[in-house]
Amino acid sequence: QVQFVESGGGLVQPGGSLRLSCAASGIRISLRTMGWYRQAPGNSRELVAVITHGGSTNYADSVKGRFTISRDNTENMVYLQMNSLKPEDTAVYYCNAQVGTLATIAGRPAFGSWGQGAQVTVSS
Image (cartoon, rainbow, N blue to C red; front, side, top):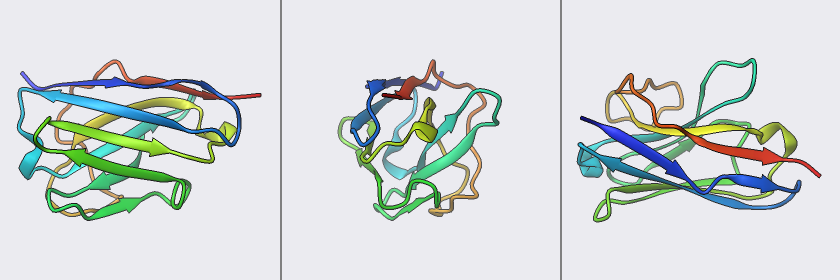
């Protein structure tokens, strides 16, 4: 059974930083493209960052230059470093493996089951 457990969320002021972690189990992520998604209240879930097994990355325009996705294949972990946070970044953040191997921001999640997510709230 594939599971993703996200952590590291919290309340942060505009301009602040957070680092999210995603622990994967039931799957070896080393050969998978991985992605971070977010879902704000009233919105659909959107893909914001992807990383291939080789380390190529891609980002949604809304987070480009502020967010950095990384991975540790040995630990089966994926990370999202978020800097210069804005109120519009407020959302629940999830990770998932991606369908296919490309670093496309138009990709789809490989698994229909999602973790509990990490709540990120950006507010003064």
